[in-house]
Image (tube, rainbow over all chains, first blue to last red; front, top):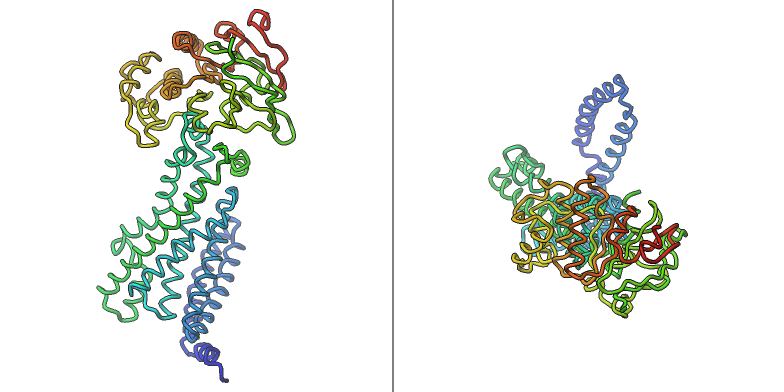
Length: 274
Length: 223
């Protein structure tokens, strides 16, 4: 075996800790089975979805672990390729929340790329993210995932606001407002609504929840105060990435719901209503 | 008499069906054109074409003899103001709604003008009232003041009293009639109420299936 990456994956796969991992999964699965039993007994009717979710999740996360294992031995440039791939997938998952909006995949791709990409590059350049494959992938994926979630929430809210405030938007157009001016209130509402989970996450830091990264660092023996500081820095990064993403996307999209003659586009409104 | 507003074969097709078809009408300066017809006859769709909230499929509109496609839509809508069927006010005070056109572009509000307009629509001293505390008729009058705030040359009224009870309807109608006459406004009024058309209109056009089927003086058309 000459390929160091593959060697590393095999080494990781043969580690006795993998057996421990399966035991832990089995214990957690037993608890899930209890929930499944309740769902089945009460005829709630979504036990199939739970099983499918669990199997899919297991396969995806183990595959991800194997890929990360492979990547840890790869050249650092691969980090950029993988993060770019993640951004494309994030945009694909997210755009489905606003398919009625024209060009929403492209704007989501550009916005997540801009928001998450700029944050990752800036933080890496400033040294807040170590230029190692491990840090770039782990922190980078967190930033992208958060940007995706924020983008999805913004798209969902924005389409809802357009549909339910059509009369108000057209009333403003009727007194000479530009399209941007007519939707500015709804853009702000969408941006704020999309950022609520991140804002609440920062508010509740350490009080309601010990976030995953901080918990992991403490379990791994890191100084808890440093773990807390680092977690806070990460939360601010998530906020920045999410904020940049949704501001960019709502600005790009708010123009696309209007025609060249500054009319609310009937086709878009009809598509939202469907 | 000079035409302030003129439509030339104005047509709008949606989903293959014409909802406004080949409408050619003239509205003289400082007169009221009342558009009547049953529900679904295309009256409101016609009105939305006049300030270009919707795009004509064919034909056009001339404002003072100029094809409105040559005018920037924002400027056009300031010159041809539309009062929508539902008042479509935003949460906030009466003042914030009347002066919405200034506030949305961070321009200073002309409070004197707001006060004067509120007097004109019989809502004196209501500037700081929350619009949610107003009755339907009062909200409709705020919507009229919001349109008049930008000082339009043409006023489009879409069923301005259809949501009101009969007593409020009579008051709002009287107020609109008074406003139109004293301000010398050119006006297109869409209404399903032929009696209202007769009271307010100088000229009447009757719509059916998107087409004008009768046109003339109220006593001729509505007889």
